[in-house]
Image (cartoon, rainbow, N blue to C red):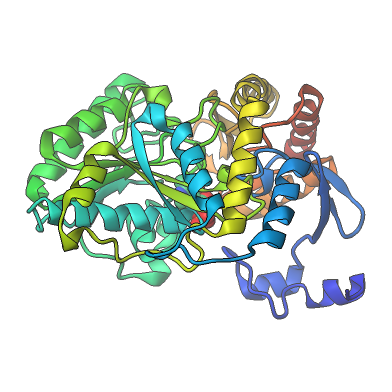
Length: 449
Ligand code: PLP
């Protein structure tokens, strides 16, 4: 292992970091996290902080779950890899598919297709949606509808339904036939509508209008996150997803719930869609499926979709998949992680500690007038929107956001920046005292602005 000086000097010299400017990274040198325990990370300089990011919305069990680590090690000894392409399988994959399906049976999910992460899962859903319509004799249904501010990963399909220009413009043209509705975001929307019910109705009316304009018989699927994560923790009005479900049903459009962040307990329930009383046709998942210990994702479909594939002749074959789909080590991580998720009932702690984090962040708004809006209230997903002028809702500049981030880290908590939003998604195993540590550090960070 190279020494610390080597690591600092070479940090970004050869390594291009996702979602960052390679030149800036070479100049500044990202923080190097060396180790982690419980919900704390420790960097190369020995500074320790509560990880309010949960790795990247994913380390739901914290960093020290020995049962998951041991399951991974055991599987590595027994069978480190075998393909699950048609014709072969492995015991861990079979059990993992059962375990994942059990988690989302109440959401109507019936079959599981393993992937290597969230972007894979989203693109799997999009591709299966098109194939589903072809199998049913409606090959013209090729378009996708989604929401602005939505984040659906970085593959071509997911990036095309993505609702943030930042993730699209450098790579355009995207997939043709993707249309975006306004985000169900009461703080900022094109209608200046602050009433959640009325906002939900206005976007639903726009959806009807856009679908009529596109021609319903050309639309394959509508995809949304039950709570928009990377877009700033945007909690939709309670009626919104239900209204969109009705619209999808009326026009034969499949509904995909992107649960990459919201699945497996983060929102205080096992799925995000459940909060809104909605059963989607498909779900994309990843992250909490292994608590980030191994790169795994899963796309799920309901019985209605499954039946069309399973009863079709040769055309029902799924010519899609990854070398690491149903990877035995990943599958062992899934089995152990989901057992632990249930044993620890992480959704209950997410609900309780999430309420504490959300209320605490709201209290910070009383003493820091740069806090424009605080969002959350469904488990451990909290967004704090920072503005330079509260009345005008002027987004805070990037340099000040960096200062807040640095000061918060120095005061003991790692948070994540999404533009002028501070995003928090700590491990679901976090304690009351550790949430207090995050809030105190954020208080210090906001003061530094
Ligand atoms: N979908 C959602 C809702 C996400 O939040 C993410 C990642 O944060 C993705 C998809 C992409 O997942 P991955 O980064 O594992 O490819």
